[in-house]
Image 1 (tube, rainbow, N blue to C red):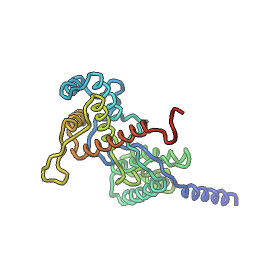
Image 2 (cartoon, helix red, strand yellow):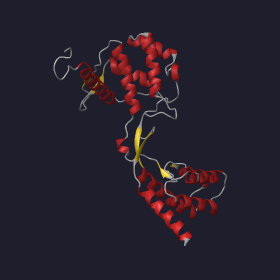
Image 3 (cartoon, rainbow, N blue to C red):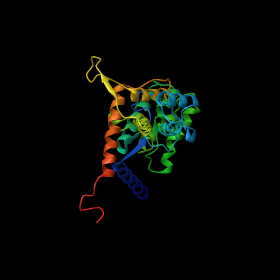
Image 4 (cartoon, rainbow, N blue to C red):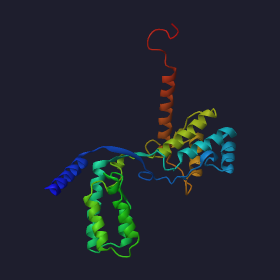
Length: 277
């Protein structure tokens, strides 16, 4: 009876744990991004080399101090430290756990049918996370399975047992891919364009661009601001490449709208009466 009571209690706790649902937001790079940014930890040195800064200053009539600040702020946009929070994407707990179980069922089936090699199984298992584990003990199950695979030349019965235990333990191995990849947005690009726009504005230049017809709807975007942003982007991508002119146009428009709204709120008159009485 005591054993039945303990087992029943454990089953109830597992059901309650699985019923709990919420979402978290984690930073992720590369989910929906065609731009290979030069990510790193640049600190006060900034991301731009001396030659790059000199070129930007000379070509676009930018003060030296402004270019130095631009380099540092671009470095912040490209920061890839562990505590960075730029591209925040929703991870739903219930969905992540279920997707993890689904992948584990597939891996167990493939491994038992000898349809995959240990290295392939290891690569797939490394995609999972113990983030939603119910206890510290449960959180050790995935690392243990990974360690066993790393040190094994074959998929042994012990590894099969470890995978089964992972599958049966709620939250021990979750698939942390975003809930909806369609909502993913390259915030790094947006922040980089905005940083360029701030520098451009602070240099006394106008936030404008021109459009010429090239046979496509909306035409093609050009102008000295577009050229400046494209030059900067080329300096901080590997291999060096630019962005779509239309993409830059949308980011510039978004920046101008936000700036206008910000200034309107800052300079808005009092709603009632006179502010001095």
